[in-house]
Every structure is written in structure tokens, then in C-alpha cells.
Length: 91
Picture (cartoon, rainbow, N blue to C red):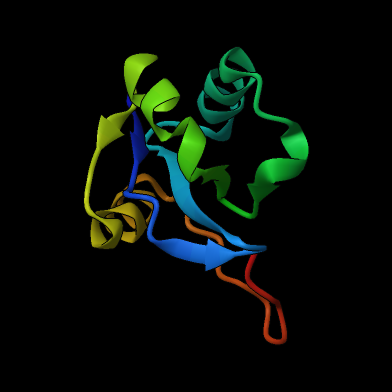
């Protein structure tokens, strides 16, 4: 059971964002995010959007740093990938 985070390279709302995912379950991911104090509203389909100023907090709490392209691969391998509906917007 591991939680992963990619670098904060995704722009939105005047900030840069990372994606936080689990390779095990959404429950694991929700528990990890709650431990960081991340609100549930930051969860989007299959990941949490985490602002760049929280990146170091997530790594210190045990999130494993991976490249952005690894995030989708990990979600697919775990069977946790949920595709964005057409017409959806970025964070």
C-alpha cells in the first residue's frame, strides 16, 4: 500500500498542482489525505489535487515521488483509473 505524488506542474486557479494517488484503494488515499488535512473536495475522480505548497508535506508523510506519466500507469494497474467525462474542466 503506497500513496504517490507527481511534481506540481499542473496549472490552475493561479497555482501549480500535484496529483496524489493510491495503488491500493480510494480508502487508503482518503485516509492519507485526511491525515494531511486535505479537504475531501480536493478529490477528483481518482486522485487528489494538491497545491504546490503542500507537496513537501505529502512527501514527509510518506508519499512516494513519481513522474507525472507514472500516475496514470499506477492508477490503471490498480484498477482505480476513472476517466474524465467529456466537457470536464481542469482544477
